[in-house]
Image 1 (cartoon, one colour):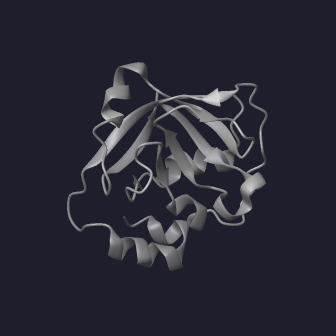
Image 2 (cartoon, one colour):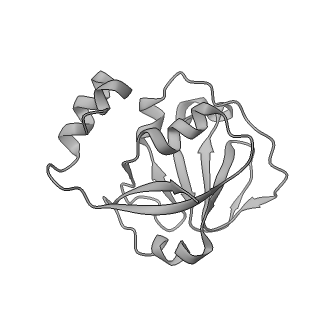
Image 3 (cartoon, rainbow, N blue to C red):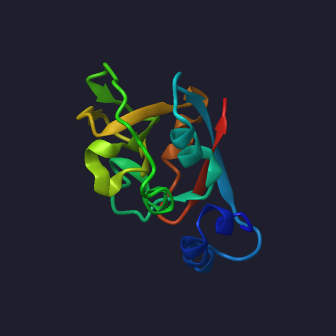
Length: 146
């Protein structure tokens, strides 16, 4: 938690108050990265590794909203993805085509149309997809590069 101030002093204080003290249970998810990710995309996945969903969209996706605050103003240039849809286990990042949400990391739970507002970052390892069904509101998860 000490590195929150290095990421963002203002939001570091807010996040520190919101996260529990002491040992934090963090669910690690093995992520197979797409080639050609920008440093900002890698930072959004790995630099702040306390992703959490508030529970309002669990049927469709896990939304890690803190990234859009921590990385506000960073460049999340849209990258072309030829896929028609994203599938369960895909990890995407809202790009600059949807500026208000840019930097938000999402884990797809149900097929989702590729509308050009998200960059594909990678995919959760096939052997760990069942873990996604057990993540609930308030559970803290992170990513480990496969």
